[in-house]
Length: 272
Image 1 (cartoon, rainbow, N blue to C red):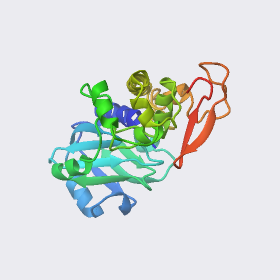
Image 2: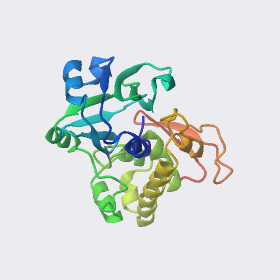
Image 3: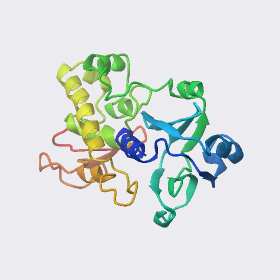
Image 4: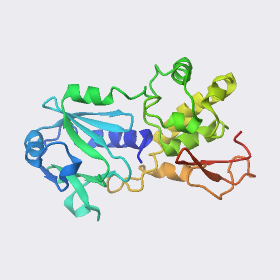
């Protein structure tokens, strides 16, 4: 599932390509991916413009010239592609938004959605999300406050969108690795250890910034010639590296375990 770095990468690259471009056509191939009828969806979008793209957690919010919002959550398997009809990927699309000859393809929205909402409805939808981990206001003290009174593991806490927005399975494991902590470490124990707490906080900052700069781990480029999107997949240290030798200690073999139903990867030698 795309996480903060993937969605932030999409936000930046799309902002360079579609802002203030008039929408010339809309095609909806799967009505369940939207929240209004295709007729209303088309009427609200055609001849209008996207004036700003915001990311909130794992969501992208397209601000329309009408004041409405298009809220995107890709969920599991969702990806984006932008290009001409000749560059169209050989994948089923659920929604297509055309900007003249350029088309933004929404692919794999079987579980995800693209909803047309008012500003108020969007705010209500986002109201339960935790703070943005890369916001300058999200300090070590704020992080500590978010963890107080919580139970569970590092893994389950980091992927809880009500605690912190934007972190999922991949980056929770990469963060735990960067902090030299096992993902099944109890969050109560982290709170009792100032050094561990500091390491975990700074690992969140460093991993998410590095992954965002590295284009995230998406499987497909966003457009023809895109050499950034997905490149961070090559830099993951533990996620989906089961059976490989740890690149940090050169001793441990990356293990895969389940923590409350979620797969987790770690090095048993240098994560404690």
